[in-house]
Image (cartoon, rainbow, N blue to C red; front, side, top):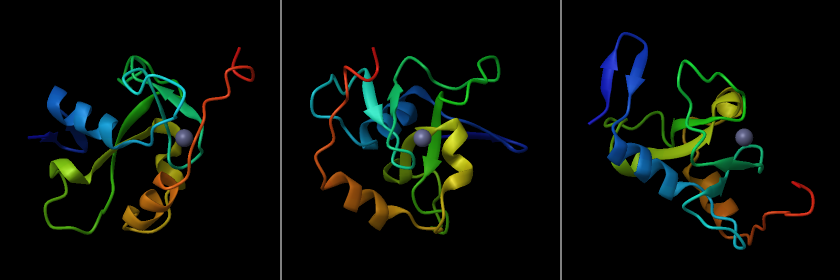
Length: 114
Ligand SMILES: [Zn+2]
C-alpha cells in the first residue's frame, strides 16, 4: 500500500511495477524496459524512475487514472507517466482516454531516437 506523508506519496515496488505494466506498450521494444507515456506519446525508460535526486522532466512517476474514485491508490488505478506530463492531464478520469490509446498500435522509432 502506498505510504502517504504530507504531500508526498511513496509507492512500493509492487505498485511501481503495476503502474509500469498499465502503461502503453510499444510493439517493437521490450515492455520491461520501454513503455509509452499516454499524455505526450514519447517513450519512458523503466530505469528512469523519478526520485527527488533525479528531477529530469522525462523521468516517470505514478499517475492516478481516476482521481475521483474512493480508493485512489488501488492497484488498478495506477499508471506510469512522465513526471513532467502530470500537469497536462485533463479530465479527472483518464480511463477512457487510456483505453482509446491502447487500441492503437504504437511503435518505438529506433531511427529517430538514435
Ligand atoms: Zn509524457
